Figure 1 (spheres, rainbow, N blue to C red):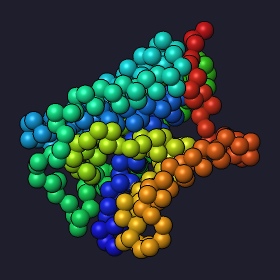
Figure 2 (tube, rainbow, N blue to C red):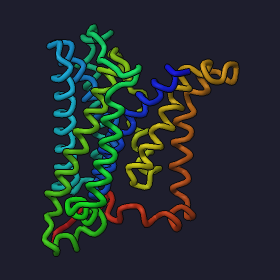
Figure 3 (cartoon, rainbow, N blue to C red):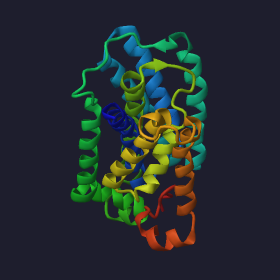
Figure 4 (cartoon, helix red, strand yellow):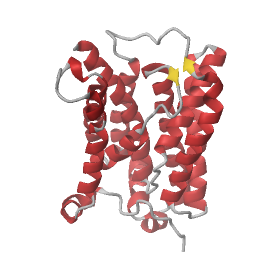
Length: 291
């Protein structure tokens, strides 16, 4: 049971860090549905780097760097070129799905390095993720930088009149979002499950995207949701540890995605929009045209 609990927290780490990246971007008004693609790039290039150099540090740094570059690319298309943000994000996902399959094929298999040390079995990245959640909440809620980000995401025209550079702020947030997505992917391939395989993330990025909406753009609710979904995911892998004999593990495997679909359907209802719509950044997904 302890191992199940620990593995659930390890899984939640990946959802949380990727979700925090998306939350930062969305608070500035930039929607990136290509989380899965950024995570695939971070996981694959981080894995390749660590295996080639024998350095975990370089692997994580490369994962963050490629994520930041993808964030910059998404920013260029959605902020500078005013391309539909959903289309740009889907392009990143498709690119990640195809290109990482080609690049990672020669590295398929286990990482072949000593595992990262843990504390009573718990990965140190879970602690990092919790600290990041607190830091994101503090910055967004208690600092002038957070007010600037939220202003850009709510009404960019008013923010511009107030002296805030909307494009620059959104670029910074997009890059930071991409770096966190790339880091989460690297954590998956270097720590959580250090074995590279074709399309190994299996939709984790889309779950992280749904969790941001589920959290109502609150980092602490996102933390709770990540732990919940991490538990469901681990339950789908080892249901016999907790609920032996209750449904097949293949049925449990679809539970996180079924809940994700349910959350998104609920959020599309008029009741949800009327009751909770104020939590959503008003300019989310909308390009800004400077007068």
